[in-house]
Length: 91
Length: 486
Image (cartoon, rainbow over all chains, first blue to last red; front, side, top):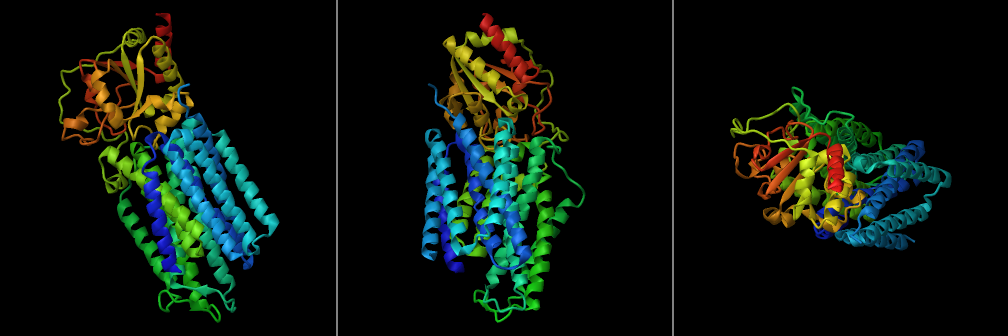
């Protein structure tokens, strides 16, 4: 399991480096806030632990994590969209 | 069922990758962001469907509360407030990762003394510890950065005696806590702790170890960011962005969840690339930035260059208007001062007025201008400057030789020629915009106060430089009116 995880992590990092190193400077802020929203993928982790059978504490913490992660995801994607909307070519 | 969920995670990962790929051009970027958002939706729905996770009310409550707060923040924020907003969202991501790891521990505690059939590995302890550590550092670090960027705490580097020692000590405590957490799992590293029953000997080190790591990391995050000055914030913001990705990936290792690992790795890579670009643009190593102390009001260093006997010449909005109107090519160089004065709309208006008169207008953006990567580009886009008029340093540096007037709006260190030739200068070797190659330079500035690197700028003393003192927005607006009146 650990080895599988390491393999996935390494390959994904390489793809990340490849794709992102070509993003132009103009879009660095949207890149940051967009990728930041993606890091809110912890939302999935939060959902998993919040739903696991096992005690009140696990549930409370899970719901807390869920709220934080949702702020990150929803806020991140919306703010990125707002920014990208403004980037226009000369008409 | 399990296969379907794994495939759904694969789909979401693919959507993330294509979404980010579309960020390679402003024309496709918006669609890319939406693609990534759909990817997130797929991952969330797949997770909700799986494993009978749903206690619907709780889930819904969490999603609605979080979503409402996020949406409110995203709508309310001003474009000038973008750096601190990015930092804040980052912090939320970090704390979420740490709390998920905490919930994982709570579950283990709950199962103490029972044969729950839970499998426990040594590496589970390690990854939980890492998840707490990175998540907490990201959380407090991001919120200190938020405070600095929004001006709620001073942007100057902060130091106190013994700070470095304390930082090292806390790092040692974090690692110690991590080791402590693994003590319950004394079996062969990667083999399952085949639990007939999780014993108290096993769960106790987990709890106390995690608390130690959590507290140490909480303080560590603060100590890592407070010594870093305002001018270095683009590096910090990028690095924290990378951490938030790594925190998510660590959580993925805890839960054995591929979608977390993939997305976390993507974000980690993106943050690291930005960090490297920012460091290169300042010709400094990451370590040098992190040790901090660069910038702020306190340390005005002598440049080893005699500015004595040289004087500055001041100009007026009227003269500036005339100079600009009769130029063939004008290059605007925005910096953090433009953001502070909110002068971007006035600048765009001036640019358009000049274009009407047949002047070629371009914008030159240094990679570290402002407080986060791409800061100036966002502000100018907000003011409706088309992105094809914005140029990166390498594209435009050759053009200053044929430029009549360069207008420097609230930028300082990134146009200081000392970086090219003055070995004594702290910014020596930093790539700069060659504005001094243009026929005339006009510098808009509030006063003669030095820039954030705390050093004098010899550009101001050049014979072909004119200073236009005052608030950038006021000054530019006056120039616009003068140009219109011509």
